[in-house]
Amino acid sequence: KVGINFTTEQEKDAKEQFEKMIQFPDAGGDSLTKFLEGLKTQSTSQASSGDASSIARELAKALEPIIAAFKVVEQKNQNLADMLVDEKKKREDAIKVQQDADKAAKTKKVTDALDKAEKEGKFPKADRDKWSKRLEENFDDWNSELEAKPVSKEFQSSKQNQQQQQQAGGGEQKKNPREILRNEIATNMDSGKTV
Image 1 (cartoon, rainbow, N blue to C red):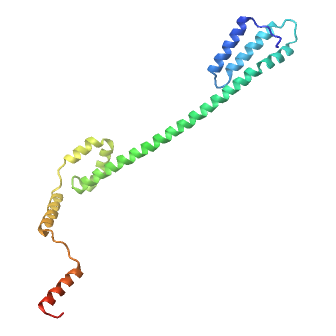
Image 2: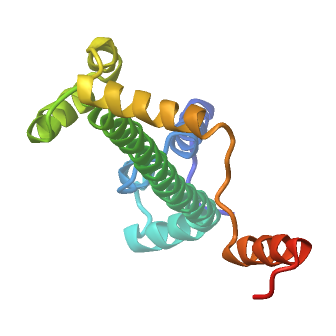
Image 3: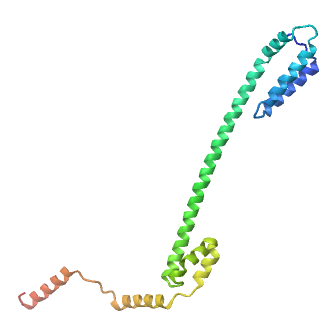
C-alpha cells in the first residue's frame, strides 16, 4: 500500500485524467508526463514530515501498472500508425496503376483515331502532332470535329477503285500454278495431244 493519501475527489480526478490520456494519447507522451507530474506534486504537497525520496519511490511503484498500460496503448497506436502508412502506400500504388492504365487507354484511343483519320486523308501528315495535342486535350470534341471532316478525294477514289476491282473480278480467284498445269494437261489429254 502506498503511503500517499488522496482525497476521493483527487483520486477521481486522477482516474479521469488517466482515462482521457488512454483514449486520446498524444505522440510524444506529454499526457503521461503531465499526469505523473501532477501526482508527484500532489504527493509532495501532502508529505509533511515524511522523507520525499521514499514517497517518490512508493509513488513510482504505485504507477508501474499505469505506465505499463500506457506503453501497451502506445505500442498499439504505433502498430495502427504503421498499418495506416502501409494502407496509404497500397492505395497510392493502386491509384498509380489505374492512372497508368487510363493513360494507356487514352493514348491508344487517340492513336487509333489519328491513324484512321490520316488514312482517310482528313488531315495532312504534317498536322498529326497538332491533332494529337487537340485529341489529348479534349478527345470527344476534337474527335467529333475530325470525324465531321470530309474524306479526301484520293482516299475516296482509291476506295472506289478497290471496290470496282473486286466487282470486276466477279469472284475470280487466283489459281494455284499447279492447278493451272493440271488443267492444261487434262485438256491436252482429252484432245489427244502429247505434251
